Each structure stands twice: as structure tokens, then as C-alpha cells.
Length: 524
Image (cartoon, rainbow, N blue to C red; front, side):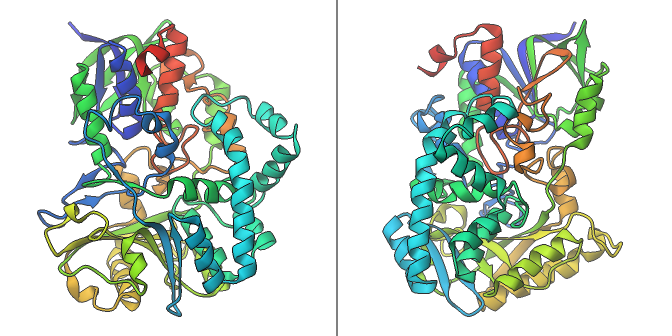
């Protein structure tokens, strides 16, 4: 006889665990099934080089989730009861240029503006402050719908079109990130400093409809900064696991779901790779990428749903990531960068930076250094043995190479090239490497079925694929038309567009509403 639970959650990434956490707190029986040997998905910290060196496999800097009531109001008591502790460095983000100068985003707006005036210009410093004020004015409107199911796409546009502030915001959202910066700033360095950060979420700097992230950047960045869980990004997942187990949820790894079982147009359970069937009385919540949805459901999906899925687009970029165990921590050119979390190493010229993007967009491996780095020793020394450090490097890359070669062919070459590039900015780092691990776009795609084509954002997030059109119009309400009781959670859903956002809370909110369960009681 099959096991039966109130709700089955397919996938143990942080979004699925978030949804499960609210359901379990409501007193429902919950089963989480994860295909890997560990939970967390892209929010996992592992010793992949040497014992004692803790590496964030994917996500390392958290921002979106800090705005989420999940964390802001500690709705599941992850901070107050289950051990989650966030560290906020004194500086969240920096860029070191090939000429040795650097821009630093401090947790102090005045210091950030002073640094811009010194390295870029007084005019750009004033323009940054103006962008900050406009961004802050829009925050209440943006926050209103950020962590709830989005309105229809047309209604969202119409809402913005009702006021001067909304129309100004709509102009910026419809613009490209580079377009916004070109209208406001004169310094190549400041433009590169802000654009490179966006490319970490695979945002194309010149793509229209991608300006929203850039427009909101100053407000969220200055208010929250980038923060990271003590001990590793996986500290968030560890707290979620403790919360789930405390409320009686069952968590099973090495359990691959191959089918969502349906009966009479309703999701009634799942089938595992070994043939085991498990039943769900109330709902199945799937971290199922839209591209995989048609083959996962054992019923025929609506024709319109399938048509929209086929039109969905992944990002133009992927990336390579390098993880190093260092014998000696690196030292950046400015002492304040050692107390920063995300640190870019970039060309001085905007044309050179744009050429990196052009190369990636056209399937070429860029030869110009442009990368992000994280050295953990100063901000969180618990991630490595005393006196040593973990070090992360990532570079945007094409998923498919235009010359016909494979990433297996080019992996060793790009790995060596990446280390040499870093060493040119941080001399001596190469000789300090004790052990390393390196992932290509193909490795990233193989890591999770959510990372389609090596896109850790799940799907691209331009305006046309956001709000009530994310991931598609038919799937934007976290349900699957024609399959009652099947809910979606994941990085490919609103409000997430890459990064750690805790978007599974919105899935829980929708499920509670449909079932008539008291969400307010759970979070009170």
C-alpha cells in the first residue's frame, strides 16, 4: 500500500523547502523528495577541495531573501530559533580595475558617494544619489507585489501608467541597464561597476526590458547590502531543515521523482525512479522547470500551456566557476575590499567590458579579464582552517561554443586561463592554491534540472518574461492549468530572477488561499 502525505514537495532546493516550511508549520504532513544526496539545490555549501574548506557551490551573496517577510519578519523563526545568522560585511561590493583603481559600495551611502566622487567624478556622485532617491521612492510600490502572486501582465503595466512616478519607473524598466547608465553617468568605471554586478544574474547590459534590476539596485543595495549566512550559504538550508524536522516533515534524499501522478485532472502523488508511488491528499508542489513539465505530468497538458513553454527563453549567458582552497588569503589593492563580499576584477574601458559581453553573446570565450571573486577569510573565517581561505571566481560564458568545440574540450584551458587572470590582479594567489574545483556551463546544467542551458536563473527575466508572464502567462499563478493540486516553486517563478529570494513563500501563500488554510495564523 502506498504511503500517503498531505503534501509532497518535489525538489529540496531552498524554494521548495520554503514552501514546505509554511505547510509543515500549519500542521500538515509533508514529504520532501530530493534527487541529490543532500538538500539545498543551488544554496549548498560543501567541502569540495580539502577538508575544512567550505565552498558555496552556487549562491553565496543573499539580497532578495532579506526583503522577504520569511526573513524580514522571521516568519518561520529561522533566525530566532533554528540558528540562521546573516553576516553583513562593511562593504558589500567592489570593483578593482586594470589600472589599480577601485570603486567600493559601502554599507554607508555617504562613503559610497565619496568614493564615486574620488574615482569617477563629482557629477557622477551626484547622479548616483539622484538615482538612489528615485529608486527609494519606487520601493513601496515594488514591495507591494514582490512576495505575492503577480497581477496579470497588462494590469501591472496599467498600474505603473497611472502616475508620474509609475511612468518614470516604467521607462527605466523598459530601458536597458546600459541605457539607464548612459543617460545618467559619464564615467566608464562607474558604468562597469554597476553592470558587472548585473551580469552575475545573467542580465544582458544592452537588452531592453532588463533595466528594472539596475533601477532598483541603489535602493536595495544601500538598504540591505549583500549578506551571507555564517558558515556558508548552506546555513540557510540547515536552518530550514531544522525547522521542517521540528514540525514533523519528512525529508528524503536520493529520491528522484520521474512522474507526477494524476487522476481525474488532479495531482494525486508521485512516482520515483525505482517505481515507488507515494500519494498526496492535498497537493504536490514541484520545483519543476517549465521545460521539464510536459514529460513530468502523466496527463496531457493544455495546448496553450505547452505553446507558451516552448516560447520561454533562458538567459544569454552561463558562467564558469572556480573554487580554490588557499594557503594564504589574498590581499586586494584597497584594504576596505578585504572587508567586502563580492569583488569584481574588470577592465578599465567600457568598450573592453562590452567586448566581453559581445564575445559571450556570440558563443566565444572572452580573453579580456572580467570576473567576480569572493575571499571568505576576513568576513567569515569559519569557512577555512585558521590563517587560510576559500576563494571563489566566476566569469560569464556562453553555454554553447560557436566554434563547435565542447566544454569538455576547453575546460582545462579555461581553468588555467582563469587562474592566470586572477593572479594578474592578485599577485601570488596562484602559488597559494592548495586544491581547486572548476565547473563549466555544461557542469552547471548537469548539476540541477532547474539550471537549463547552464542558466542558474532558471529563465531570463526581461520585462516580457516577468511579473504575470513569469515563467509563462499560463503558469504565472503557481498552478498548472488542467492539473488541479499541482503547484510550482522555483527560481524560474516570480519574484525570483536569479539569486536567493525565498520565492517558495509565494507558492505557499497561493496554496493556503486555494485550500482555505489560515496563513496569518501560521506567521503570527
